Length: 305
Image 1 (cartoon, rainbow, N blue to C red):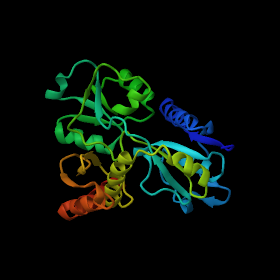
Image 2 (image 1 turned 180 degrees about the vertical axis):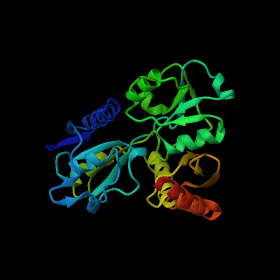
Image 3 (image 1 turned 60 degrees about the vertical axis):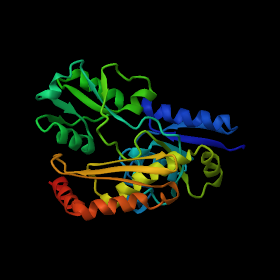
Image 4 (image 1 turned 120 degrees about the vertical axis):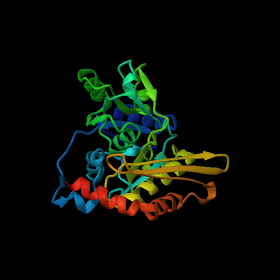
C-alpha cells in the first residue's frame, strides 16, 4: 500500500466534508491519502475537446479533467450531481451508505404562506415542478450556489423559504431549526448518496475504494439513475426517483412532471432484489408509454426557448 491515493474534490465546505469522510475510511483500511482541492480549469485538455471524452456535468467537469490529466486519482461526488453517463475512461467504484434522501423547506419561522400565496426559492427543475404542482398559486424563484451561499441568499431576500436536500445541511452541521421535511416530494435520483469514481485503468484505486461500497445503496441508486437515464435521453427534466430495499424486495417510486408542475406521470412498482438490474429502465419505459414520451418532447421544446 505504498501508493498515496490523491482524492480530488471541489473546495466547497460540503465537498471537502465528503472528501475527508472518504479519506478517513481509506486511512482506517491502511491506505495513504492526500486531499487535492481542485479549482475550475479550462474546457480543453491539451488539444482534445471535452465532448470527445463525454464530459458533461457542470458540478463534476473540473474533477473529470483533473483525473484524466493525472492530477488526482479518485474523485468524490454527491451522486445526484453526477451525469448518468460517465466520461470515457472513468468508472464508478463505490457508493457509500446512503444518508437522508429527503428534501426540506427552510423557512423563516412562519408557514402561514403555505395556505395562501408565497415565494419559494430553488435552482432545481424537479423541486420547482413538484412545488408548483402542490402550490400552484406560489411563485418559484431561481437559487444557485453552494449550500452556505443559498442559506445566506434566503436570509437576504424576502422569500418565504427555500428547498434543500436535508443530507447536505446535516453533513456540515448547518441544518436550521426552522425547517420542515417535504415528505411528499420525491427526491432526485441518488439524493443523499456519495459516489467514488476512478480511472478505469487504475486497478489499485479501484480495488481500494471498492472496499467502501455499500451494496444496498449501490443497487437503489443504480435503479434511480437508470430510470433517469432512460427518461432523459440527454435532456434535463423534472424527474424524481426513489428506491428502497424492504426485506427481499425493492419498492420504487418515480415521477415525471411538466416544468410548470401541471402535468404529472407517476409510477410505483415492487420487484425482488434479485431482479434489480433492469428495474429502473422498465419503470421508465412504462412512464414513456403512458404519455411520458410526449411530455419529454414538450420539456425539450420549453428548455430551448
